[in-house]
Amino acid sequence: MNVLILGASGMVGQGVLRECLLDDGVARVVTLGRTPTQQSHPKLREIVHADLLHLAPVEDQLRDLDACFYCLGASAVGLSEAEYTRINYDITLAVAETLVRLDPDITFVYVSGTGTDSTERGRTMWARVKGRTENALLRLPFRAAYMLRPGVIVPMHGVKSKTRLYRIFYSLLGPLLPALKAAFPRSVITTEQMGRAMLRLARSGYSKHVLEMADLASL
Image (cartoon, rainbow, N blue to C red; front, side):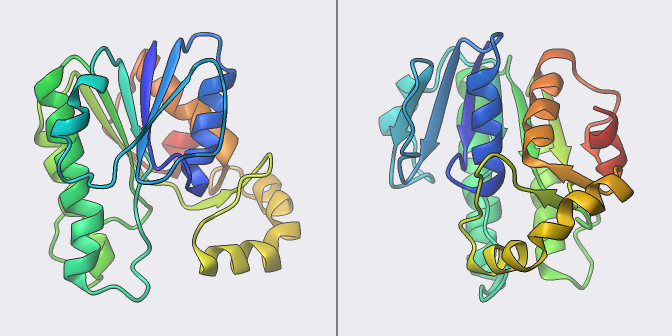
């Protein structure tokens, strides 16, 4: 199958990209983002495009895809609700609406987060915005759409977060993460497992469209 990855330079996206490139069942991997991934592979095609709200100049390169793995997003730290919404809602919907218009027979897999507020009315800003994003994506006429709500994600195989706060977190607690993963296998997931779970969703689907940690662990 042919897959599109957004956020391939971020922590989750790096892990997803790695698994896609290693998977013999993936013929072509297209990445779309504002910066290159700095990777080279025969299956990899990179689209570097500065304005993800306006994709008309690159639309012709977004055809013949079977799945989109949307790993792009930003932490709410230091952002106003308007700024956070622009990155995590406006850009996401701009991409999704373009893809579903080009080819509705595509599976869209969105990396959300544990604690996301599907009611869109809670007190936590990021959770409201993520909930609004999930709900909007689920209303689009994709062949299938899945919202993933991971909790603690353990980076593997040299994967690193672009967010300074997360890098500090992993540098301080990194040695403990494998033990946490062993002790709480249904509460902690690795970047490798995230990539494999997303590929399985694209191939085989799942009984739920909003997947919590227990669902991801079972995948």
